[in-house]
Amino acid sequence: MCAAACLTLAFVYLLVWANDRGARSSLLFALVALGAAAFAFCEMWVLRAQTPEEFVLAVRWAHVPLWLWTVSMAGFVFTYLRAGRAWLLWSVVGLRTTVLVLNFVTGENLNFLEVTSFQRVPFLGEPVAMASGVANPAMLLGQFSVLLLLILVVDAGITAWRRGERRQAVMVSGSVAALLTASAVESNLIVWAGLQLPFTLSLFQLVMLAAMGFELSRDVLRSSMLVRELQASEARLRDSQQRMNLAADAADLGLWVWEPGSDEVWATPRCCAMLGLPGRAHFSLADFTNRVHPDDRARVTQSLRSTLEQGQAYEVQYRVRLPSGAERWIQATGRVDEAGPGSARRLQGVCADITERRHAEQEALRLRRELAHAGRVSMMGQLASALAHEINQPLGAILRNAEAAELFLQSDSPDLDEIRAIVADIRHDDQRAGAVIDRMRALLTRQDLQTRPLALGELFSDVRLLVRADAAARHIRLELAELPADLPPVQGDRVHLQQVLINLIINALDAVSGSAGSDRWVSVQARQRDARFVEIVVSDSGAGIPADRLVQVFDPFFTTKPGGMGMGLAISRTLVEAHGGQLRADNRPGGGAVFTFSLPIATALAVA
Image (tube, rainbow, N blue to C red; front, side, top):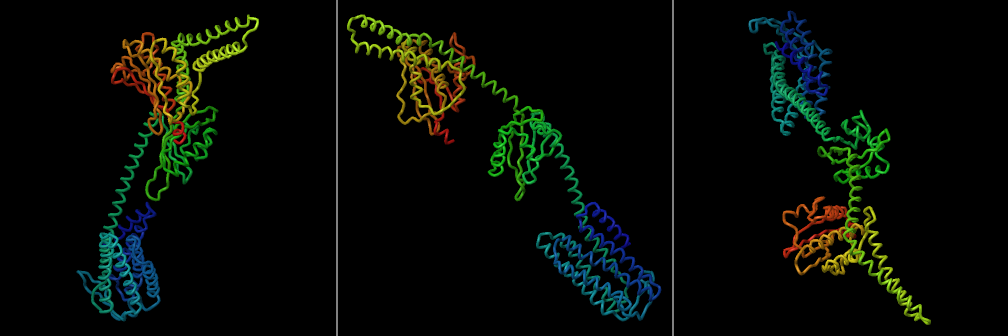
């Protein structure tokens, strides 16, 4: 019965070890069970011996499975509890091996130098063999090896108890120590005291194996549950990954993870297709950088390095060259991920193909330039009569001065000083007319946004000369306030900012022209808002903007003028935002409208 139970346990845990070669405690427990099973057979051989010689032979060979049991038990306790002293373990192994050798070279066996009495006596209704004789002194070494094993077991149990593993300490160390002591007491009583009892050590071994097997089975059961949980977790992970890939594909996004330690990049098929690396779920960073456009390569590499070193967000747009020679725009975003303390950093994120968006942005930029140019042409059409009047003034003065000079030259002795003064006036008036035409040409010319530090006084002077004639023709007072002496320059494009300011002033002049009030004026002021922005405020004494229309005034094609295009304010807001500022509209408490737009200060922009 004991042998069958031990063999069953040995077979079970050998299978456990065969499936998991790292489970050394299962292998050692199986060897302990095999030793106990073999010892049970030898013990049954001893009990059924018919002669003294058979009895001596059975006891001698019983020490072989006992050696296997002792050595394996020491190794199991040391491995399973992860405690104990290594020198004690090797002392048990070495001493028990020595005892096994002495068992075959001294006396009849390790227990007897000589058997002097042999008999078969009834025990539990069946005759069993019993013997007595001269004890072998070498058996003291065997008992000392058992003592060392007991010390090893107790020491390992105390360590496990202090570590908080109290159940393991009691079930393994406690049971082994208790039953090892009981079996030692029984064998000493039989051999040294001559007690007339058969050897039943296998019963103690079976109880020890049952206690250890019960505790070990909890670990096996827990491992099985962990395996099932791991399988379920892997299944959920696969489902989650499939859903994530499906969502990413639906959003036209590619997922990627870069492990700097192994220099390996994992990417979804969609991401690989974007980079021109189809059919490759893993590739190196060099494979990726080789696909990046040479003009963007240094910027992308620097961004990756900065992200890893500083932990900042990774966000970059770059071009890739496909094997076909075509170029594609990619936008990548990511972040640094650390699984835990001491874990290697990795960078993970998403990428999107923004080629069509970039083309759309370029087309929108081109259309914006066209609309801005159209707006300037339309605005100059509104200013045409006033500008014609302003040009006619210097032209008329030139004509009158030329006629006067002609009269002076008809005299016999012309006054040369007067003629010189007339010529100087002609030159001055010609320069006035030329300046007006140059300003009109600059405003009408189609230009890209070219920002530079710009003094607002220069901008106000140009605009004043362009709109003062229109204001005078409408009998509206145009007030361009004196600029503060400490007002810093702004970062802007002169022509585009002229267009914005003229648009707002002409709109204000139109609003005041339609007003019946006697105090008709348009005011332009500038002030520093904060350390980064300057504000320009255009206000008027008109009727203001209906409250329900304030949110619509910047919408394209929205206008309250009978012949308006509805593009002036939309273009103005686009130009201001292109400069990094904002344009807003409000009503004055006393009546009239206020348009305020901000522009970045040149020095603040440089610092930022």
